[in-house]
Image (tube, rainbow, N blue to C red; front, side):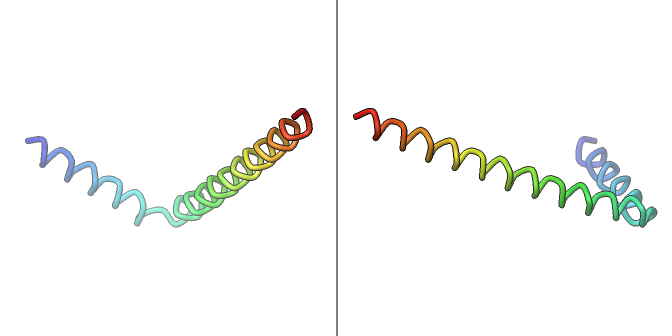
Length: 60
């Protein structure tokens, strides 16, 4: 029963993905947006860490 439900969900998702090319494009754009956001977050974190390290070293 559970297995059948998950298969149906996957088939549904596959049908949605294959049916609409504009949706595929939007998913691709969404993935690119996610990648950009992740990169920005990583860069911000690195900059903050570097600034904190520099400030701590200057205080000592």
